[in-house]
Length: 309
Image (cartoon, rainbow, N blue to C red; front, side):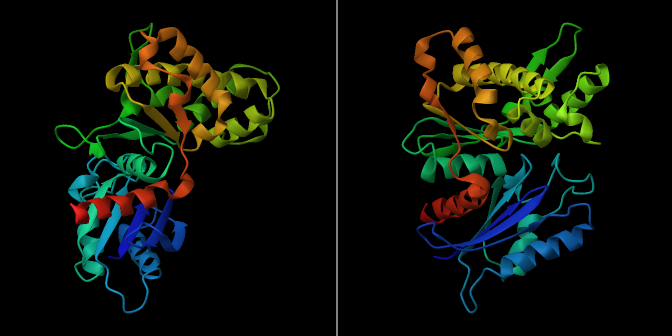
């Protein structure tokens, strides 16, 4: 069995060639450049994927990780990280046709990352296992009894859309407080509201990555923003712990690499708000182990599970 795996994201596209044992035998990567015409983006995906397939070798199946909740349909629909014209794009069929009609198994990136961390990463041997990615947005996946839990219509699990009421009556989501996008937006607001010195003032457009870097260097504005994000992340984690009673919650994505800077305030909230110690132990919150290739590995794992099933 030979597996071609594709991780198509709003920023980068990664491709890999996997053995039946999920050893990655070849790998390729490129910028997605989704602002270009769709046909140009699709051609680049196909070209980079073809480059990792050995000459004369048959592809048994293809796994695709895609950035939208309805990815299981094989279509790109309502992907927040893609331009608006990416609607009803039949990505699975296009990729299948490009590779001789090979069967394609496509899923949401958060679900596939959860599957990868369960089989080969920080969640091995746990049940239930929750994965949350904290990056541009906040997504995730859940594995229960060794299988992805995707809910009644295949749309679970979207922790970034946990809702919180504000004092003025507005309703905001966890993504509005703890995502990388939120960090950059909040930093811009705080810089405009004060004249306090900050490393961030040298940036014309502040991103979450820059906020994190400034926080590591002790910048007070950046540290305040990260600690506030950790508070809200902790509230989100409390909800997940109470809803699913998992054995582990694995955190991935760029914001999670801040480690204790964001996790210590999150842990403090969990310890204060959890209704019983049976729901939580400090070692339940773990950092992801598979790095940038987590969705690539997850897509290959998803294919293997389907073929063996």
